Every structure is written in C-alpha cells, then in structure tokens.
Amino acid sequence: MNWDQIEGNWKSFKGKAQQQWGDLTNDELDRVEGKQTELEGLIQAKYGKSREEAKQEVRDWADRI
Image 1 (cartoon, rainbow, N blue to C red):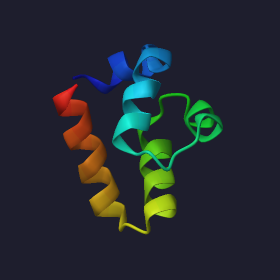
Image 2: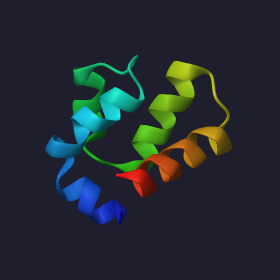
Image 3: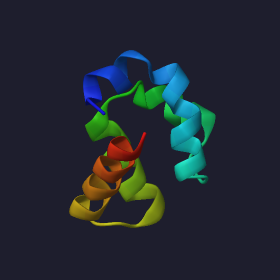
Image 4: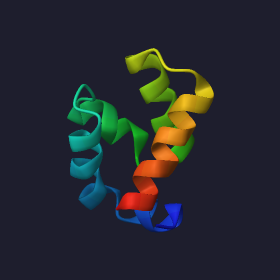
C-alpha cells in the first residue's frame, strides 16, 4: 500500500499497527500521526531494533495491509 494512503487514513490504520507492534501505546501511535519515519523510529526505540530492521518491518507491514 502507498504510504500516502496510510498517512491520510492513519486513524483506521493505527489499530492495525497496534496489532503488529503490541508494545506501542495509543498515545505513541497518535504522536506518529502516520509518518513513516516516526513509526520506524518508535519501533527502533521500543524494540531495540536497528534502523534498517525497523524500516524493513514497516515496509513489510505496509505491503501486507
């Protein structure tokens, strides 16, 4: 899926993101506001992943939804 579509409809996709990354809170996801790099950084910090790992996870997730 195109990231612009995700960002534009973040409220609908936020729940799917929380299903994928259960440790992320609603407040954290609200702050992301659908921005891809913000989500990647949050995943990187919360899960201790490298920048590339987080980026790939977000890319894979966006492709599946």
